[in-house]
Image (cartoon, rainbow, N blue to C red; front, side, top):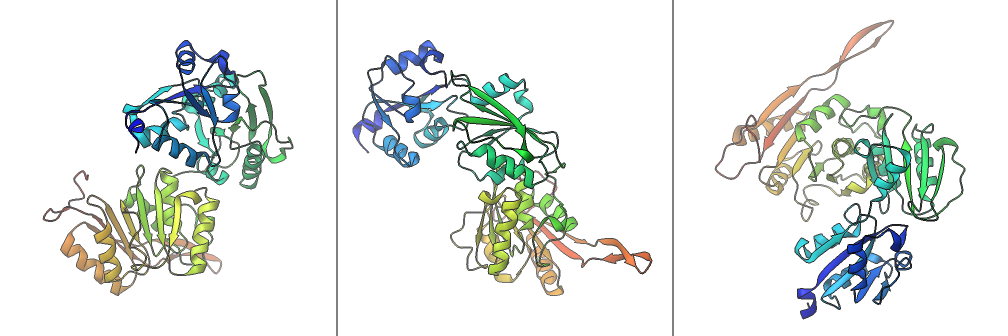
Length: 415
């Protein structure tokens, strides 16, 4: 790294569609003193009264930004960003790369604040979804009847893609309001209904406000088995609800789903908290395809990666915060998963056969934790009447991995 880069500071200035006129005195003074300013061409074209060298991002921007951060040309490098750089913006990327001590951020009003001010929404009650780089299907994780969404668009075609997605998933009656070039002289607002959206693509700089009208979609685990494509190899709805609750999804954790089958446990884990990630292990190629299909249809496809069979494919995967074993349970698989799990991580194993239940009993005796047997019966027709049909009982072992020499007590708070 060069001598310049060691001491360089990065100044990130937010700018709105109103350009130079909308900047505060501090932002204007900062840009007026700059030697070099990086930004998108449309942002650089908004500047007045600056003598700095202006450099538009190459494509892909991420690679160009990485080079600038690694080898800056000046002690102070100025970077333009849209609105608030710390709100789904480049500011957070820069801070993560070089540290907060080398970064100064001068924000403008965010696109979310401008949109809510325009249409009269309380920003605190709105869910914001960025589709700048994400699959549009990720919108489904937040879609439920009565929810207000703000969607940050990738380009001019995003509104039509969002309308089609909502229409295909029971939200065709939802209202879409597309707000283009907010706060600038070319501001335009159009509205319509998702199911009959017919507006041509407009300006690529837009935000979409959605008032969801459609089915209530809970994030609580236990969705119907029919919501998943499967060949019968699926953790059934009630057992799945117990399993995901036992795994305790919370925050940006990584789950290993071993013997994933349809991937239903991993999907429900991510619907409960979409900040997480799932690594699914499945030996059957057709089932692996179904996992990807189910992840996409539930809006969590970007957060699930599918690997091969365990234990061979476990090596090299991201260290798990939680592990679920639902299929292919053997001593080797259990040992490899246990060894990979971080201290304080949770291990949940479901066993159906006598052999696998015996294995769990041995591990429970050695390592502690909680073991329970779950038996569920459902009412089903019997001729012209109704009877109870039992599902196969499962034995479930729940264990929190402790440091060597320490006992695990699930009744005590875990790290």
